Amino acid sequence: MSTFSKLEVKDKDIVTSLQGFFKTLLESKKIDAFMVPWHLPMKEVVMPTLISDVEQLDKADPLAPSFPMNAAKIASRLTKKPAGQTIALVMRSCEIRAFIELIKLKQGSLDNTVLIGIDCLGAFDNRDYASFAKKEVSTVRFCDKILKDKSENIEGLNLAAACKVCEHPVPDNADIIIGLYGIDYQSELLLEAPTVKGEELLQALNLPKTSESASRQQAIKSLISDREAKRDKMFEETSLATSNIEKLSGYLASCVNCYNCRVACPVCYCRECVFVTDVFDHDSFQYLQWAKKKGRVKMPTDTDFFHLTRMAHISLACVGCGQCSNACPNDIPLTELFRTVSHHTQKAFEYEAGKNIEEPIPLSVFNDKEYEEVVGINKQSTE
Amino acid sequence: MTEFEPTIVAFFCNWCTYTASDLAGTSRLSYPPNIKIIRMMCTGMVDPKYVIKALLEGADAVLISGCHPGDCHYINGNYKARRRVKLLKEMLKRFGLEEERLRLTWIGASDGLQLAETINTMVDQVKKLGPSEIKSTMVI
Ligand code: SF4
Ligand code: SF4
Ligand code: FES
Image 1 (tube, each protein chain N blue to C red):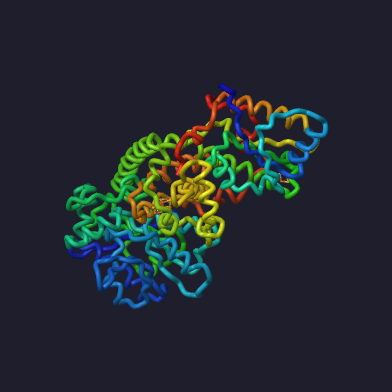
Image 2: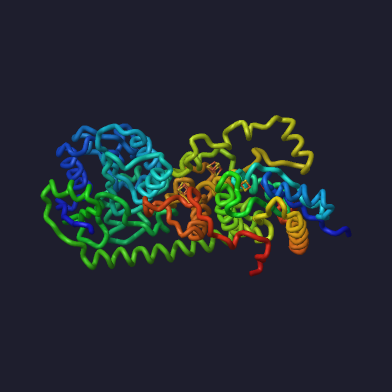
């Protein structure tokens, strides 16, 4: 059972209030460092940053609509081996879910961490965030647009496609969840502690107790059902656009095999990807043979093969964070494709990526009697 | 016009189905030449990549066949294969791959007859479906 406390917001400024909250935690010495999105001093860029000096938290801004990378990868790097110090990881909902998947893959650990999740207001892709930053609109103003005006169009810019269809605006699996939806966020924020770890930390701060209001629950419910409707529409459109291999090839036609999407994907877990090994470093003679056999061969080769293999590897772990699309130099809507396929493969295994740390990854376990429908030669495609 | 002769790429486990195919040969059971057999040490070694590559290269169908549940020489390779086939089927049907073009069967070393029947039936089924669309499509 979660416990709830209130965090007072002064001057309607939630950014400064959040910074204040992080500072109190760091000063309490129960936390040795924060990993949190932070405004770099030399350019309007926000990056995950590891902070141990309280004053540096003045530039922490986890609500800035910037999402340059999925920080689950950083969290994995920080927790793979025990460091004996406690790190508070401030992450978005999809980052926490990706981190959970990485932990299941033994590429990270919850030991010596405190996961802090904030109701996610979404973010722009990199290009739009750069335009947004030029407009010098404050994060507080952005939050008002989303929370008060309920608008997804901010100064002519739209949230990233992944965010618009995200049905997880409230993070699961955090030790502390900072609530913004369905409350009077301009005067107070909700601090929820779903775990013992979170509860102990909040208790030490002596904050006023409260409970989760019905209006918050209602606001979350209606936001989720809104998002699900948009998501399902996106699934339908994407399925239609890729319903056969020819269409899929068209969907991926501008891919140049740079593999940025796999580098950006938090759950592309292989330490060395087969696509960058010698296996795909063919001799020129080989390419000429292929060209001769088929009359022509598109270079670089194996584009569909790469994407389908990546899909076989990670669709059961995809958390829909949108970083694959964000990373693509050629604007291929990869998130839509991967989310659509993942939705179906995860459903087939009754699995939801990032939801439950106790639930094993589908391909890591098996039973002697299961999925017998895939065995044999009787099932027809028309059935 | 000559009749369409499908190409079926088959990944057979060395310990059971591959032995069955030998047996079928020595007992003069006939099965069509459409099948291109690749001997694997276990169905658990059939990487999803192999299946995807075979299909993208224009195989009309893929057959994976190994030891019956409980008989895998590596204890559980066939159970892993079953989950992988489940995943591949879910995934590839989104891009139009028909049920008949990816099959998994358990055929023991002494089941030469069952193997011949399986291959014959599969060839018939794929003939009915026609050539894989991938052959006539520019796959990138
Ligand atoms: S495939 Fe794309 S949306 Fe899914 S987890 Fe990877 S980067 Fe995120
Ligand atoms: S990032 Fe884009 S261009 Fe690069 S490999 Fe992925 S899909 Fe292809
Ligand atoms: S040894 Fe035959 S399937 Fe594993």
